[in-house]
Image (cartoon, rainbow, N blue to C red; front, side):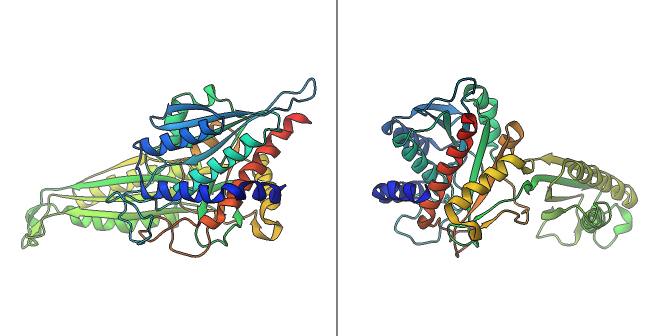
Length: 398
């Protein structure tokens, strides 16, 4: 069946590439995907697909119903296929003919490719409706830090467009082009942040005994964060605490002890229990070190995206679809989870489903100014979407 899909999309593969490069040249960041959403909606309507706009501000959902019926007594199934549309705040440096035309914004994570591959699947399935059930093509805004999936769900995504299962896909450099990787259970981490503040009196650098110095508390806190991972988190679990920002004092006054020091960072974990532990210990650490150093220590912990947890049955189906497309040797069904995060996690909390990586081949990594989606993997991505759809909906025909 995969070769049939590839043969069927070959006549319009150049058009898909042109769509991808057009989206790439006109990047739109979170909740500003007006042009991209309009392009998506126009294409879906052109191919005879029912279109709904405005979910999660700029999200689009296309609905397509198959022409087959299920045996008496069985119910038709529905499946959600999700692609993200937003770009990043990065200045592109690729020098490509279709490079970003918007200063400071770039498709540096492949969402232009994700949108295009799902559009390709929508066109193919619209032209080959010999399936029973309903497909919802979910084009999501604001994956990059905007919680766009959560906003679409708040807008009634799964009430208005019921899905028995939902699937997502992300192109990743470093994997062979057109290969697939996935694992059951936690595949990507929860992404949280913290801001610790230490407040003292400050003072003159020549007389630290005349005041209280929050820089000492800050230094002990930074070292202590690694003690949380090393001594409070089980060796059988995984967690990361990284400091990404330290601020205090004035550059032109190094002889002044600042009255306040600020430390900010990111926290990654896979399970709710470890996530709770990390939050509790960071708050306790800031307070305790503050007391020990004679200053005020507080820590604000902000929860971001939850862990991306694949459901077992849908992971098995996703692997079978990937094997159909790429062959067993090019599907890693037990990949090592990564500490990156993904807001598709919200959809996996709401409905059973799975998230898979599609190899983008060699080249610069995502979130860098030199990244570029590999157009050669578009047929593999389209074929996987089609294979997932047919396998998922065929369950209602048994």
